[in-house]
Length: 204
Image (cartoon, rainbow, N blue to C red; front, side):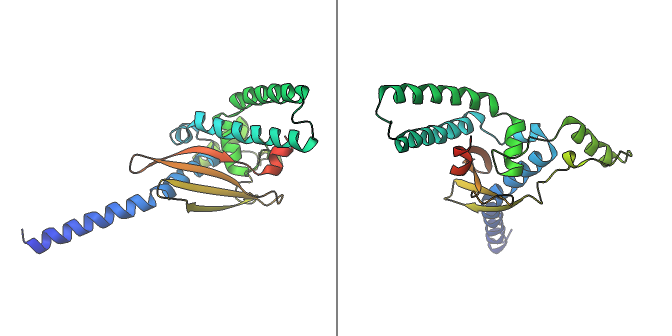
């Protein structure tokens, strides 16, 4: 084989590698968004580091609790310190229970802690029946998935190994929820943090 042909093949391989490397988080983000939309929790689980997501939310709630205590002017009193500690423990337990595939899917679809819960099983079954061609009754408004109409989505790199999905609900202006993906290996990406708007935290 001629040297020029070998060089061309190496250049092509390098370009394919670079293209896949750069595009990999966009593909992962699409998989995550589609899994959240369709209620495909098996696919979602492959790209979510649940312990890391829980810790990211716990840190945000702890910061919000401390800030509210400071603003109240009671941050240094013994009763306030005890109350803050108990509130933190309570929030930690709630987050440990709350962060499941269903709730992560709802956050991804709606971009807000105050958004509706994930679709019901009957809604998901209805979707599967429609996909298979089986006639179904027209869903009521509670079964309509609002993921496309209710939020704007922006994707982008924040460093070579950090990528964010920003979901801005159109129903309020609290700011976007940011879903942080981290590179694991060369091409695989996992959701490792969820950064919710401070207004959402304050309303919890």
